[in-house]
Length: 558
Image 1: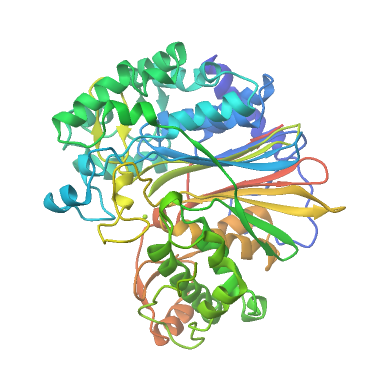
Image 2: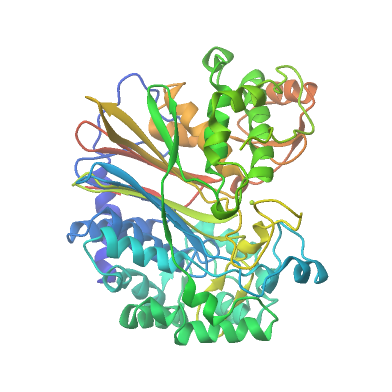
């Protein structure tokens, strides 16, 4: 791909895409410098401008939304290597315009055949935190990219990898937020000699505006483009990966890589304000967003007032209930002891709602009755045919496990940290199991003339904030009537555990004091903790799109 042409596209297409008309009955964003992007034919929203431009170029050259999403994801693996890459996992929800239906892909990898509960216990494994080689599971992202493009794309994987190969080979200037996050991981990267050699050129993290090249990763991607993903899942790259992990006493074997396969799954949904909100089923946390929406159904949230103490309290308490159920009931879909749909029934939701105290924060929530955490990129694409893609890809923690196989140019994820060692749960670690996942792409449909139609593709990166962030975004848009960009920009809360909750600084002292009086323990967290969102809305003609100012990204269209 021609580098100068892509750089020129960024500026030119932003100007073209932002010719817009206001959406009716919606309040625009008040954040300086950001407004909803409107485009007549197609649009791409990612967390990094070069990735957005690469996706748009694929669309202009005849590719569809699926091709553009994978191309953008591949570029993000170069420009945001701490967040994402072929060493991680991915999920996607896709609206297929021709078939008029949603399909969903779970491309999360499984625990290696040597990963057992007894071994992890003996080695001092602690769930939920970076654990080096103990946390490395089979990376599923690359197989997911390939499956999406082969099944629903118009281009080959080799073709859509070309922009990423070019940026890895020739270099690119770092954007500011990415540079700051990268620098924060300097000490962590120094623990692994290959990670330091790859990501700390000249002994430090590259600064904003400095050029970074990753020739090892360029060679890795070119090998995959030339030889196919088999070189990763059992071939020469896979052999190097397994040899390195074996030297570190890891758990993934060559046979584990060969057996890896993405899974087409049926998304789950709940009705919401005349629309239908869709998430992926377990092994990820999407069901928590749906459960929160259902718990909050009877409350007049609009009268409470946006981000008022009463409003935030109800959302935080609903979050505690839904996440308690995640801990108990969610894990590998093949190991659930209660069907996911059971958690969305009227009886189950009513029981959960009965534990919500409207006046007092509950320090501990038990899971519902039995019947029968992350560093991530989220992007979304819509094309002129009407296809829409909601796509998420992640290393889990920043730079994942911190392990780079020498000469490959990418970090292996630490998704195994999502397992628990507690016996008897769907998410209890075992060989061949998929771990609990924070990654959740979202989608919204509406019924028109008796048929389900695509309306919105959305998502929010940021580990455990994702499900609670989905709910806040949807309420901003559908309940409070904010326009798309304002719905993304609005200050968020993030609940952690017990009564610990963080609020973004625009939420004032009066609200904070009132929440503290209810028993909430307020803590300070950096902006990155509140995640970053992208979203696209299908209009009667064309699209609207937004991209989170908490990230370096942008929405562009034509």
